[in-house]
Image 1 (cartoon, rainbow, N blue to C red):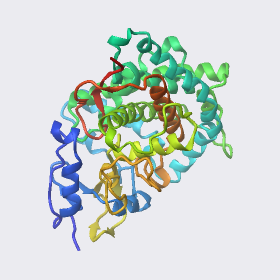
Image 2: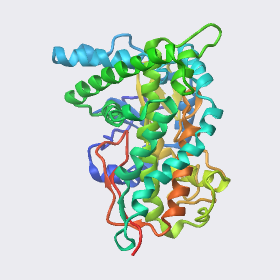
Image 3: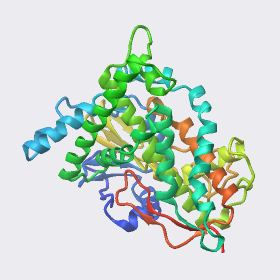
Image 4: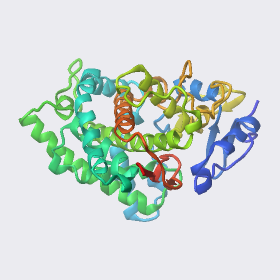
Length: 421
């Protein structure tokens, strides 16, 4: 039996650009040699195999919320400005149901689910498909011999934020800062946060919250047919979302729905254009987006190159998993990106296989924290890839993809694509 003191040690090299670009050989070594290891630099016990990760995601003896009642970041902040920034960020974080555990998590998730319904998501399909066409129109209008696109900034970034803005009901004239706020806030998810990132993130939270509070007041007095109105008036057993809970929920929906989808789209297209020799079973160029073929293809892309590689959990009760003893207050890192390439669960995991008979990937998590926005993310990706390959069937890479810094939110900075001779 192993515990934190006797576990093999290794430092997850999140600041190494080579690792960020291709973490799979390093992770395969860990799965073989030390499937659970202690990272002394970050104070995290990491798990790399599918079996333990899937078990821990479902285990209610672990959770997202920190067991300690006093956030250590505030205690250790070196300046009053940094202390205030941490306090502001934690006020927002404390109202995100993603960071809660039952019964509070159950209450808020039930309220959000009553507004963020499958019917509301399905009703967005025509608008999502129209957005794909709008974003591709400038590229299709180029001269054939000069057609090219930097995919991340031309398509992957504006597409999901436009979808979330449509869903929430943010007026087009007021959407300009959404991408900036989202990109600033998600920097808090990285393992090696710098003080200036904390300050910038908390400022973005405060600005975004003020913006949402204004929309909240507008919807209270003049309801509209949008998710924000539905959240304002959501009610279950006499319970409603508070103003603070609604703002934190809307910010979280943008963060999760924007950042993860941007990276899933860019990583997915890069995989498709890089691994052309393994694309047997890929949907045909004219296959409609709402078919089982594209649904299966999207799930395989999400497994093959995971846009959210790592989820954290805190241990609430002592337990043993995979021969490792975990103690209350231990911080656990679940490397979804490794579990999704575990050969014990996925035969030939390094092959992009659209005919995989089953694909229980970990990308949307499992258990009570399973991603509420998974149906919307799948719909967006199906519409995007079906539209891309229908309108621009001659796509090919134009140079090596450039990865962003950071591993917890992993994606591409640039992906240049040529679209014809």
